[in-house]
Length: 336
Ligand SMILES: Cc1cc2nc3c(=O)[nH]c(=O)nc-3n(C[C@H](O)[C@H](O)[C@H](O)COP(=O)(O)O)c2cc1C
Image (tube, rainbow, N blue to C red; front, side):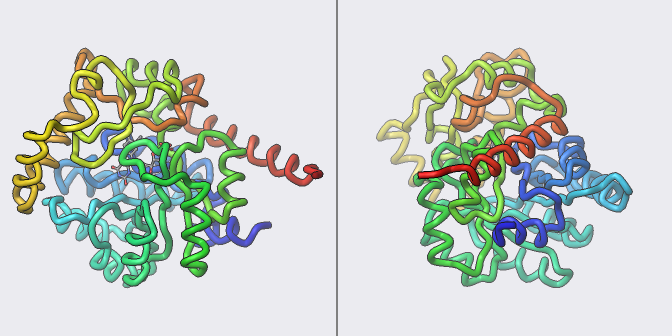
């Protein structure tokens, strides 16, 4: 067995080196429980809960399941560690009290999360899209990187994982690298492992699951879209966001106009301004995924190309495992 592959399994005590990626407004307890039953790691962004009480309730349910006989995996929480996240301090305290097994941090500095998580042996991975950010979180002592490559759903990175994964491995050989972006098949997982990844984090594929509580229209759009239908817009959160090219996406466009850019920059120079901009983006996304709303903002990655059906989470995972094993056997037969 590949040492990289074994290490994510050992690190997270899971059966297969796969993380069901955290997805704002999509991930839910039911999806994570199904992931745990199937021996992988499920995750939820803490911001999917508006109140501390709701987050606490979700973590109690996940901890109860983790202690049950049915559990073969684990779970983690995604924290946006930027100062613009006004819920961070409360959410972090709750997660620490509930002894969340691992964290994925996005944006900002994960320093406080690492310090508090280490006290009880929890692991911390940070989303990175380039080597410079990776260097900063490396110095703080993260356990590994989530390499968010181009083609990923959500805030995609600028570089393809065919390059980002080996580049991270070369520069930081002692850290785990988990590839995120564009994987929707077992052979895709194997390809990332061959490049040095310890495992893979998959998002878009799990939106097309029975357990994802998003509108029927969102799931249908994923089935019907191909990679040609994915566009990047800077109009929602200010950072490049990967979405399906709906009429509404065309209406809002990819870039802010020069006047809008000027005011946006001016406005976001303050933490208050940044928080307001983030809040505005969150509200826009929340409204857009509600049934009957025609201003559709469907956040997905390029892997929609590979998705042909809505399936139960358990079936998605068993299919990935089977495809992975077939691909692994084929790899052994390759002769050049
Ligand atoms: C709908 C959606 C919401 C997302 N929300 C978050 C989030 O809240 N935090 C985060 O770190 N990443 C978020 N991501 C990125 C995923 O965690 C993951 O990196 C990405 O989905 C991997 O690429 P893939 O979609 O091609 O599998 C989101 C992705 C999607 C598709």
